[in-house]
Image (cartoon, rainbow, N blue to C red; front, top):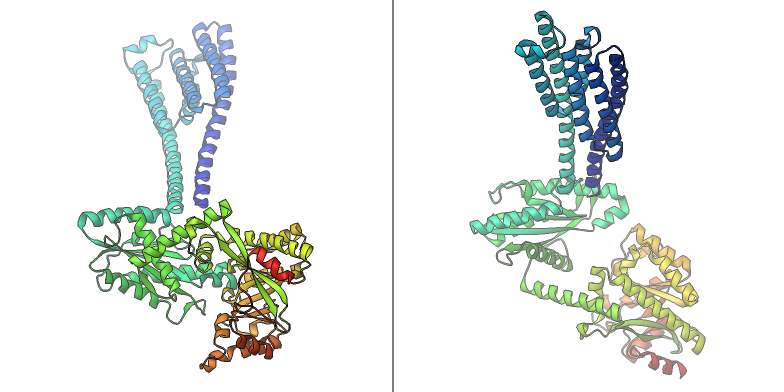
Length: 629
């Protein structure tokens, strides 16, 4: 839309240039005309040609007034009309009087030409018509008695023929200029429309155009009592392409996908009628497909399957296979809703359900998804209220040294007392916060209050351990985050080495340049970094050397399976321990719930541990009491 505005500005600038041209032309011609009229009017009066002289002087005065009004108001159209009238009167006076030594006809030619060129085409035609009609009446009818000079028939015919030829040339030039301007303006208008309603990269209709097309097609479907399917497509892992290969590579991928999408939904089975408006790119890597006049909702799944097949084995662009796939949400009119906005909203919700169920698949919008959507909206509302009305609080989970059971760190955990979020835990509201962008404000609130608590623990209770703070994986793509952390550390006067930021391992993406850059910036601040829930993600072991991590937190599921009959599960703790030793990383075990688990971890070299066997999360006063003992 920014480019469309630039095109509109360009069109306005073109009009302004034309306006300035006419403004300057009117000024110059009026000034020259005043000088000319004054000079020849004065000479005519001196020579006794009082009628001609008076007419010239009066027109000169009118020219001065017109020049003043033009300067005052900038009204070019009015100035041009007045100047045209003056020149028309002057031309007729020269024809009637013959001018000095009967040379008036010679002066009429340039004056009439100038008169035409200061006008637009159709006003110029009117001026030409008036002057031609008046001239013919004066030269070839009994009205010749009004002339103050005499012209032979040959002179009159020659004058009219010459005048007609001159006027024809002038009008043809004006017409060409008008057409050129109209063509340019139309091209600008077409460009503006293209920018406003079509995506620049793919050429597909954009969000604004799609909304119009959706309403129109729904109206038609309602009238004809037809079903209409809407497919909402989002590309999985597309951000990795931008981060690893650059936005130009991402653009090429989107362009190729849009081309293949056109081919894929082109009907070979007469399912769809080929229409340009059935496709659109809403934003980024989000596309929609409208399926008019489908007989059964399953027809939509047929098209969705064909789209998913585009990504079978990866998506090849520039001889490189990108691991990009698609999640597709499907909503059908009128089975689900009859409102355009709701249809799009439901397809969007179904798409997110597809993402949450493994990606590279499609989902129909169902009542279950509707219930989830309603729950998500309630959670979002509750989070906003909690932030605004300070319904957030922290509890504190002690972390113990496995060797002597002393408290060496405290992990802060977020709680929310908003009435709208009663019974909703962090495992439910954190994903909603991440999806809505509220997580950034929540993270800063948690860090701010955790550092404030750490300051009190250090200054008033001689606490030497770390404060451990969970941050969202969203922050690993937030370029402002390291500076925000630094500012809060400086504000609370907390030494960075007493702070540990915990990021879940599932937030890491191999080769993600932005993620690595932000982790290194945090590491440079001096805070330690822990990979939370380690073992549940997809981090390749050899990638640990690239991550500026200080600690691995063994996921509670592996601690719970320490004595499981499943050999692959009960050996995970040992594997992680060995890996941490290899890379000189501290190890924390989460979810320790029995003495046997703690004993096993201690005997096998685990550094720290936390869990209900050692301590439950504590309120602030409870934490202080525990630290005193």
